[in-house]
Structure formats: C-alpha cells, structure tokens
Image 1 (spheres, rainbow, N blue to C red):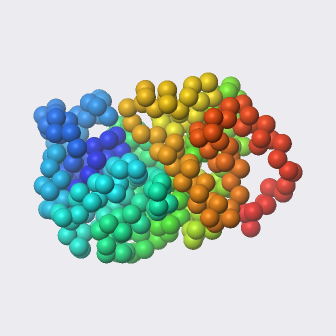
Image 2: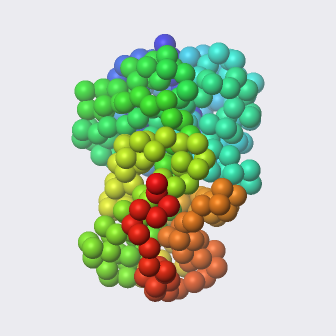
Length: 333
C-alpha cells in the first residue's frame, strides 16, 4: 500500500510522517527546492521547523510521480486551491484510488465541501473521505498523544484509512458521517476567529466559554440542516476540534481573531502570515450556506461583518449580547 500526500504545509507534512510509520509514503511539495531540502535534511524548515521527518518518507515536486503510483491520495492543500490541484492531478489518479481530504473549508464559488469538489473533479462517488479532528500539526509532529476521525460513507474505506494513519501516538476513530465531519471542520475556524477577537479585546475565560458553547450550537444547527448526524458535533470532529482551535495559541484562525481584536485589518494580518487561515475565506461561504438552509448563525454573521464589512470588533459584543432573549435550547431540538 502506497500513500501520496499532496501538499507540504504543516498538516500535510505531519500526515505524511504519520503514514510513513506504517507504509510506503511520498510527500508532494509544489516547490522543488523545498522537496529537495526535505529529502536532504529530513526537516520541513519552512512549515515545521525542528520536527524530524521519518527516514522512510519520500519527497517529490512531480505530481505525476506522486500520484500515479499511489493506492491512497491525501490532499493537504488549502480549500481555495483544492480544485486546481485536483485538476492537475486528475490525469495521474487511477479510478479506484481513494482520495482523503485534509482541508477544512468550503469552496467559495460553489459552496461545495472538499469531498464534493473531489468527486466532481475525479468522479467515483463514494471513494472520498476526510481526516479531521483536534489536530494541531506541531504537537502531532512532536509525538504528543492526539486523536482524530476518518469519515466516509464506505465502511471498508474508513477501516483501511484508520490503519494507514493510526500510530501509537495518534489514535484514529471511524465515522460514516462525511457531511457532519466536513461541516464541523469548516465551521470551527469561523468560531475560532470569534474566540480570538474576544481575547484580543481583553475578555477572559467566561466570554470564551460562552462563545465556544454557542458556537457549537450554531455549528450543529447548520450541520444537521445539511444532513449531518447530531452526534458528530459532540465528538472529535465537532466539539474536539472547536475547543482546540478556539483555545490554542497555535491556531492560525484564533491568531487572526486576536489581531482583529487588537485593531489590525485583515489585509495587514494576512500579509504577515506564512500559512493560510481557512476561516477568513470560509466565513462568507458558511453564511451563504446558512442563508440557503434557513439557519440562524448570529456569531458567524458578526465575524463575517468584521471580516468583510469593516465592522469594529467591539461592536460584535454589543450585537450578540443585546439579541432577543431566548431559551438555551432554541433551535437545537
């Protein structure tokens, strides 16, 4: 069994390292110089400095070389670049090869989930999966214990992927709810920005706890409306990932929110960031999905207003706190 991981960012590199402990694995980097450096130094100094990569892991900048010999392909590219990379890889991907999305986002133009984009480009519905959960790349690369979930409609596929990616320090669970797991992964980035704004404004743990909890309610409302299983949102793909992303200083989306709360603009923040914060591009798509499904998402709406409409972060608090009084269970059951 040979795995190709397409995308040598921090998470793609981490997943490639996990797979390489179990089976033959190659990591594709768009930049030939980065691929050559990783092969020589066994470190991704650009995205995961200081984290030693397995001696068995191979590297290439040739998409044909990476994909044509692969039995499983994991896609570690940002959601906004997923379609272009898939179209480039399509001539080299055999029809029976499963594709695993590592991205957490929604395509802006089409509002499609990443598995839907993969199916649209490659065909073979049912041979797509997602690996998601509270997975901060640096901690996993350092060998800290973590858990994740692999989701697909095909049970045999999830069990195969479970064995390929699970290690003594990375526990993988299976879940048939592809829709719920993908929606949870995309939406949590929006609420991580909200949590970061709260921190940037100087608010404490009570505020953060309220945002996480009510963010989970919004996430679950939309996820269920789109066909997700309610139990998924209480698991690793839902609550687990939401907590990690909203509380960790390693979270790029939370970092964006902190800087927004401190008064910086989105343009200033993204100019200084090396890696992509998916929540910036995902928020408008999430709001469009919510509008189409008729789902109320007040926190996400306020994040969208700050990102896209220039609303001051301090106004977010007033807008949320002064909403009509409701039951906590309103819109959940």
